Length: 116
Image (cartoon, rainbow, N blue to C red; front, side, top):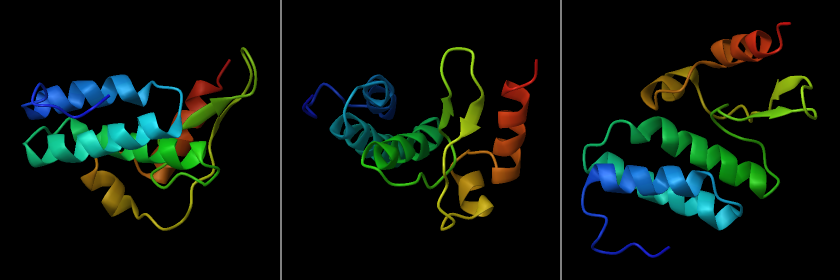
């Protein structure tokens, strides 16, 4: 996908990023992240969480730990859901600014997802 004059508003960029976030390759996630940055600059607040999630997904796709703690993985169909490894460099204050739950909240979500 090429950034063209068809993506004019923050909402346009956000929606394009949401599609790319569900792509298959690292470049999809990186472009999603970049479109989120443009969307945020254009006033689209919904893009904050997606900017964090697309960065996390990109990093994981290239073999690095996520930063914000937005990504979970399931151990097979119906298996245990785990919060993927999170590097310690991002604070809960930054997570909050990006509309991302704290690490404590992310771990509580993990526990909730695994309740029988």
